[in-house]
Length: 429
Image 1 (cartoon, rainbow, N blue to C red):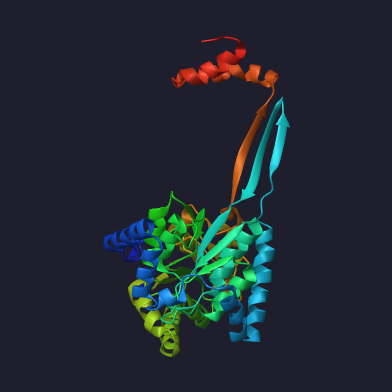
Image 2: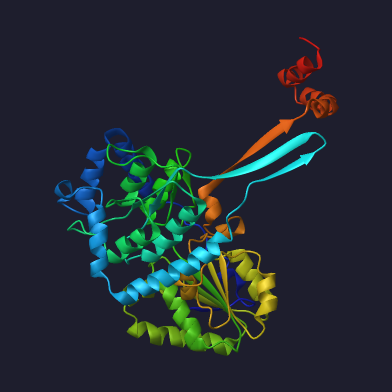
């Protein structure tokens, strides 16, 4: 793993290790073509792309997963998985229930102002396949939607060549109360959820991560539907001092690198000796990692250990990178945590590894990537709700405010606004 002395060669870091990758024009073009086809030809296009990319016999199997298939999936998973899944559901639900906003009102000087919260009517959650199975993604998207009170939760996920979806993913959907499941993936799934087809009714918002085609498609349909975020490859930054266990740091870097060849595993340390130990430990652990064929390219492309003189510099670099995941493994973590302003999620201490956040801690693991933690946050119950402002003004309060409204409308040259006030004051046009 590459080691860089930041004080000596800051230009080698340049804070570019984690940043949004510009969408490949070819990928965007293909995604647009697929979306147009789904919008124009509906199910015919869905079947065509699913037959080509995933399941040759999709016509005979059907796009929608039956309730019987979901019920049958329970018999194909073991009790340990079901217990682990339900413990995760309890923890995630407990945390997200605290997020649910309440409607409120204020009454002052003859003005009644309200903010009314309501759930979205129908949402689509995308659960990726490909390099791994992600029942946890089902939980992190469906549970906040259910807690928000969304009326219909629809899931799209790619199937294998036989038209099957992993039973663990279907059981997760069943446990979370997902209303509809479709065996469609890629940009075509995003098109179906956004525009609707003969089989898939359109949704109000699409959430969930995916590959580059899914990300491009989500960006292209934004405005037709809402989206949660444009998710890039996963990333982790570990701030470590000499007290950090190199084996733990290495293991956590590998845990993120195994997701994707484009992942960014980064460590910032105040100890040159620790940097050498962590680098050697990454190399050693990679030799036995089952997903080393994916993880190794991630280290070669984006992996780096940055050696700094002090913790303040480490925090400054971390804030500039604004990583998806930030682990803090230092002797006195409290002062570091309070200084971090940009991170999707922060994991404090050697027992709070990122994997805990992926599955069991409770906070959402759908996090901003590519530096967008500078201005955005984790998926939450808020993402599945909207609020409406309600204004109710008495005549007396209106008459007090009317002159001010007229002045401001006049400054902006909007005479119609002013006229709508004057006519109520008996000054007809």
